[in-house]
Image (cartoon, rainbow, N blue to C red; front, side, top):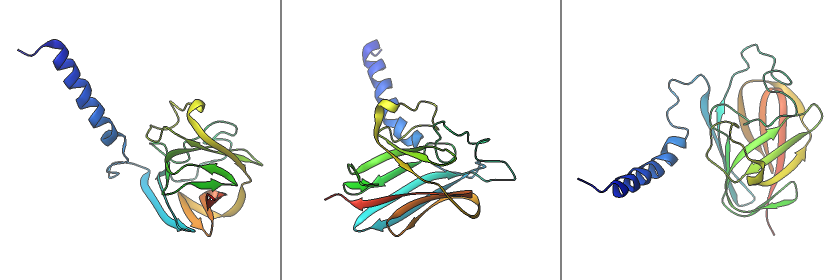
Length: 175
């Protein structure tokens, strides 16, 4: 029979190794909000955004489904993640290379974009502002209707589009 501490240590190690796999976006066949991934290069920096793609589906989004003034996962299901291959500046502020969860705080006239060091998490339920690496403020724009949330790269900007809102932030290589 195994020693109880050895068994407990083995069980904890197995859970620790399985957690990253469970936290990945995974198969979306049974999900209402399908997975999305946007990859691009901005001035030599590889950028990848992974997110859930909720549908508008006739709902009132801004201020209702997605409340103003509250942290939002900026997608569906797992928190959206963004990866930078090199150190960058976002809206002129420095951010180290790596993978971050990407949260936003929507507002009618301005949004806060948050890069959080806890990259893999479900939604914003355990969001911890103490783990924020960077916050920037941007101005939302109106655009054409986009039914399924998506992210696009337009020149030096990463832009989230959903319903009739467009919210982008500038990315550049760090000097």
